[in-house]
Length: 377
Image 1 (cartoon, helix red, strand yellow):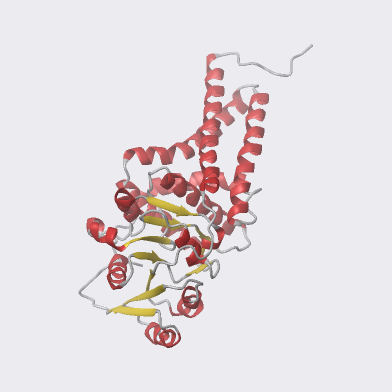
Image 2: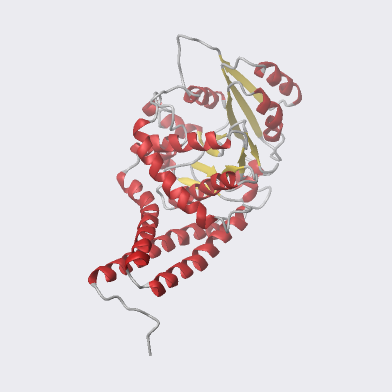
């Protein structure tokens, strides 16, 4: 009787199968770490923390977003907070809009950096001015082109703040379309990886749209002095530095989510990736290697799979690995989707992960030719 299972017949085939197995195990390990994020996350109870906090938002020629989103931050269900707007030389109707909001919201404070053709600066100056103006020790950063998921965003975020640096979940608004869902999938995976590294003591990344840290830690680090000339890094490099001072905690509660605008989503996604890869050079080698192991294991998995399909008859082993991968890793990804209320990502995730892999290769290579401009654009 002919056997269904064809065993490896050469050393090369055994090497390929071993590589396939180890690549799968590496991905399984990383996904297990992601699932632990939700098990470790504390169940936030309301009215447990009411310490005063300051929200700092810098704006530049964003009058439409001010009109649309500012009230969502100002009307948070939290008893003790101020919001500081730093107008970084806007030339539109920003000032009159801010004045109108200040009449209705006494906890809104504002300052302005005048335009000066002789003095070129980046976003870090605006953030530094906002931090200095803040009355409270705990400072939270957000972007005016984004929206909090609910009126409990601030309360939920503060209630899970355990260490000096704290960051929450950020993703694009839900919108139909293959490209748009791919951007959300990539951001979702970035959030999980950043959170996983942070909880293991190796925080290296975050998003300035949902980030907080202590004012005293900022000045102990001498602010942005170590990279003030560098456009990127007001979130990534600052987290890397402040993590050494007071550690990092994470909030993955869906009510503490910040939704990025769907307008110009692709260009925003490009800029976020460019900023990360610019800052990547500053990461310790150990962290860079740990970051790269997972995508590298996927590349190995796909290359080995193609080799097995084209040059061997070990189809049954390949089918077992992929079926197991589909069931286990897919179930884990679905758990994270449900927890964070991300829709329409599960089935298409198996296609998106291939695009993510190639996008990483592209950004890694293209980083050598990215613009070195220090201006905030």
